[in-house]
Length: 341
Ligand code: AMP
Ligand code: MG
Image (tube, rainbow, N blue to C red; front, side, top):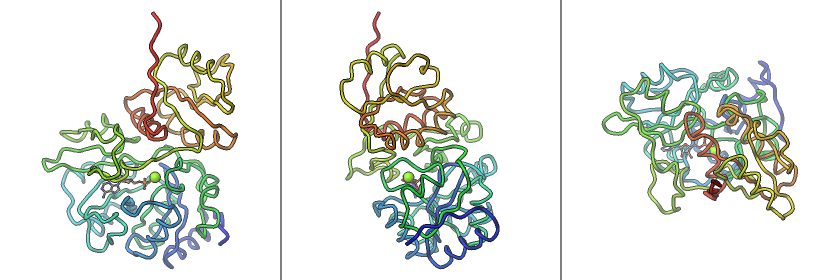
């Protein structure tokens, strides 16, 4: 199969929608990362997503809708608080988990009776959903385990020959996947995956918000977790990644001690002046780091990095999402450097 790169013009959009309607998988730009989109109600189409990605069958897909009014076609029960959150954050990088309707097959939800739903803040994505006349299941468009794609070229790198087409919508505005939440019995909002919609932003509209501890743990593959994605290695480049907590000065000393070939540092813009060792930078604010992280991890593979030491990001706000992705990319390999008095 030859993978076509399509633009977001009307003719290409209608071609992409035809592919979706015939049960095929199309690379779709969103504001978070690129997705692999297919008709969420068609089990054969959804099976093609799992096959193209090499994704474990118990890891559920997020279902994308173009309008809030489409939610009832996907979710069986929608708590009033969810509508408040939809008003505040949709379209945008927030996925909410609901009881699923029978029209959404179990293959889409990894065998769960719940479904994650999101309305993307991206004109091309919503135009594709509307033209397809279906809700679209769309996980990140990377090979399973690899960093998510933030450009059409990243998708082509991973999916060349595996899917018929990719819609090119330019660089993703966020660069990290959506915030995933569920509702506890008492309407407490529980964050299962941090993202650009932060705990602080949710607290401004929801009475109670908790961060699930699974976000920071290396869950065993047979462990019961609230979100199946927590069990798997994610976001990891081929290079070995180690996350390093400590000052810029101590970090530099650690890098100076490395003797192996192919060692790189991934540092903040503010550390880069006179940094004498091979490195890439990934911004200064948490938002910039979120934008750049996956593209930089992919670039480090391209240039032949074998081992990457990454400076620990902030753990507040969007920084929590950057930290979560890096923890998993590093397989929870963290060095804490003692500070010299
Ligand atoms: P991705 O499609 O790569 O962005 O991954 C989507 C993630 O959302 C999965 O790995 C799950 O952890 C989470 N998710 C999706 N649907 C559900 C659900 N019904 N219940 C719990 N977590 C979900
Ligand atoms: Mg993913």
